[in-house]
Amino acid sequence: MSKSAVLAPPAAAASAAGSGTPTKVTMARGPRSRRRGENLSGWALAAPAAILIALFFVLPFGLTVYMSFFDWPTFGVPEAVGLANYGAVVTDGDFGEAVLFTVAYTVVTSVLGILLSLGLALLVRPRFAGRTAVRALLFAPVTIGFAPAGLLWLSMSNARTGVLPSIFVSLGLAPDGVDWFAEPTTTLSIVVVMTIWKTAGLAMLVLLTGMDSIPAEIYEAAKLDGAGAWTTLTRITLPLIVKPLSLVILLTVTTTFLAFDQFYTMTKGGPDGSTVTVVYYLYNAAFVALDRGYAAAVAVVVVLLMAVFSVLQVQLQRGRKVKA
Image (cartoon, rainbow, N blue to C red; front, side):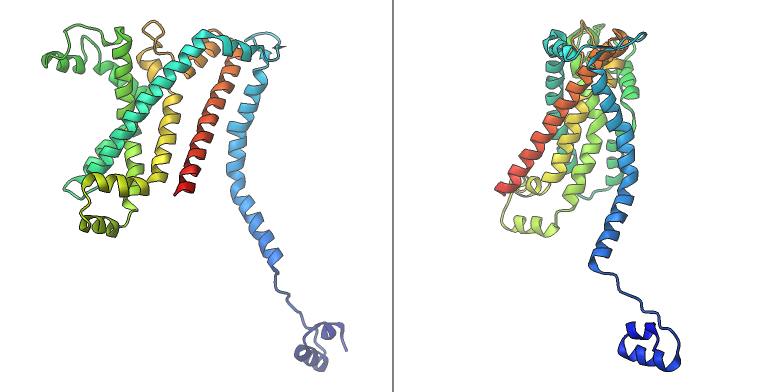
């Protein structure tokens, strides 16, 4: 009897013994093999994204951390200074003012922007004639970069040739010939309005996606129970769009805290340095003062601040889930 007949099942072995032809037996893949194959497939699919993240975030951030421990001149040999750059960042009053201004700008812009986005989402959610066109018009500013948007609003706000001052003067809301960018309050107000105009469309779209996922039966049941618009909003809509709303908050705060383009194109940090954000401060340190080591330390501190905020938001979200 052949060796293959011994390894084959009884019926196959008998057939193989009678015919003298070797029989090939195919073994089924076990659970471990399938699991190993799925793991390899998962790693293969994640590898391109992981490589891109490593090249464009992890590696540059690692080099930034390395530079922050040196006095890094534009020309010459870097000199190790330990934690001196971080000590200078912490004790620098200008950096503290930039952080305070950025936080205030972030809070005002984020709160107003999210409330406006929520209101727009509620307005354009029902079916009406031209709804798609209205949504497209509200989303259109998102397609413009911050730098072009800043130049556009700078031109519209010009005291001599801008359309906005002309409108305000004709309505008796502002005196003629006043430069809006000469006062910190009006300067910040224009930048806040421009930023909200630029970003509200995306937040509106995200919130609309969450609202559209709510079953219509829930609203019908609430209507039968006599729930009003405010009760429906606070008891049904907002609790059921917590995840999209959390995403909007994260994106809005992150984008606003890292603002640079609109301030560079519209205010140049003025008047009198009253609109210098942390990123603008970083830019000045790196490319105006050419203090690369100190600028690297500022960048690390900014990244850590954003990481702390992200962790706090995630923990807050988890706490809400536990209570629910």
